[in-house]
Image 1 (cartoon, helix red, strand yellow):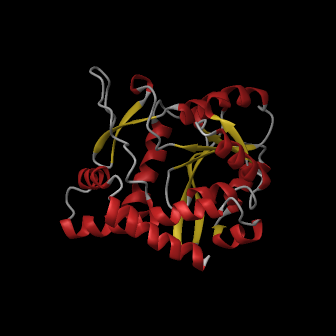
Image 2: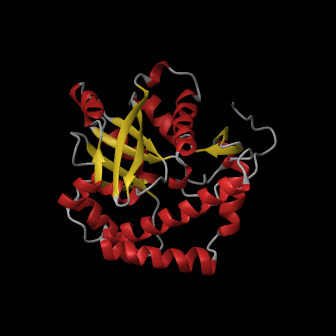
Image 3: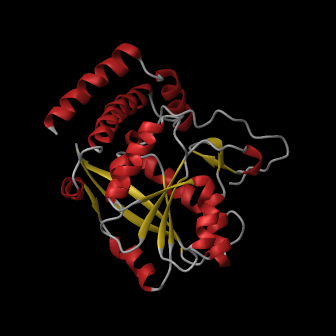
Length: 276
């Protein structure tokens, strides 16, 4: 791992200092998200982000060969009992999260500490080799990858099973007209409504998984209850709740989020309401 992080430091110099990979996008996202921060504060977040981003890349590559024993030391679940309490009640759960800190290691480490079988929803990759390789690695750690387009069918077929469905809720949405528009990090943001809809339709509790960096190469994650009784909620309650937890997490430690992502590339269509 020492070699891995020395390589990461070198990649950081090339990616950030020399190439300036998506620096304009990152800088604009930070400025709009934190308008009250000084230039010095924003620059510190920016440099910390790129350092962590390079660690994420190298940790992701290491994930192709890392052992379960190593992952269990480096990505530790703080409170598996929260999910287990739903399991004991015969309940599946929807696990919302964002692209925050070492999410690829989290995908590998999430299944081992809990009783639910973890289903990882993903978008199909253009590179078939990497798609097959990632599928093999994730399955070897106990997680079942599932294309997002097939999740509703899977829900119906596995209605009596007990699963933990991972929804990364900070993706760019495909259809802004079918999204739920919120003010997120000081900007109008379309959020996919799928997690809430499935939670309500199938009465599946919703939690959020928050990753925290302990030190370089070591992380812990904890589950936070979002909604235990989805069928009793009003439209939008669940989406607003898990988005708020993500925003609070990012504000507390901004360097861990994926700032180089073009999250705000779409404008709200005329006639679509913004929810506060």
